[in-house]
Length: 357
Image (cartoon, rainbow, N blue to C red; front, top):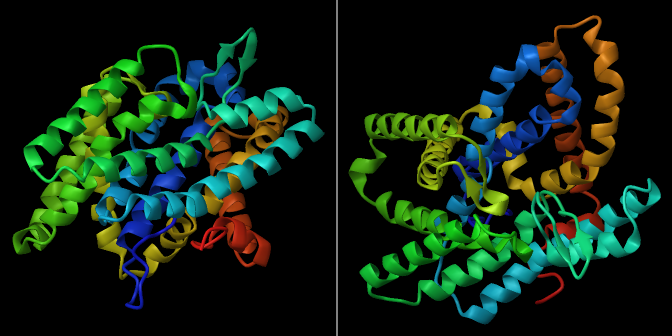
């Protein structure tokens, strides 16, 4: 989730902002679907459900689209090495911390925790040899992006673009079918489905080279078209990319593309604006924000269970949910910004040449 466009030139914050908004949507989705709010579903059900559908329709596709946008043809060993440094090492390091926290609070046992890390299921586990392997949670994304970028790099070796497009469609179709089957390790269904997002990102990068696509009116129109597909996707039902499941996978995918387009347009709008500074920082260090978010989830869920009934006495339930969401975003972002300055954290999660030079 780290930026790949950094260079000696002044940094374009467009895609940092888009990623930052995607990260905030991840936190929103996890907060609004918290089980502590279910007892109040009779008053919040429709609104919370709608917000959650919008959040989950957009929060992950944007990261694949941005990765595709900055695609560059590389040697496969270099792609693997880069993925190990920026995705697998953070995956292992974050999961080690996750395991210690969960063992300390008796949320899991050593065997189950290690199996969860090894198989990397998203939100649905499975039974392997009479042992249930629970999902690892949002950290599934790191290993999935690692695999997805390797596969995409291989597909891009096909130089005849119609054949390349057919290969992308075939992999997406296989991923959509796998999403209807038993969950597979490393979120393989999502890995294959995400090829279409990576491909769209690459095509969008090429399209942006055309002058007329940079016109302000065109950007506004494209943004609203993207918003339309986003809303259409949410109205069609839930989209769980982590397991490759959707009520309507075609509409969900169009929504993933449309929402990404909308977030990129918003990113361009605020790229040179002071209001874009915060979401830009969230996006630039999104991998740290994600890891902090994942690590606080078990504790946050238990805090919410205890405090929601107390706050509900004095506050409207919608305001309670909004307060918890804002506090969660502030906590995750502030702690991530503090941790990024710690040398060992920077080395493990932000260095692009650690441990492989």
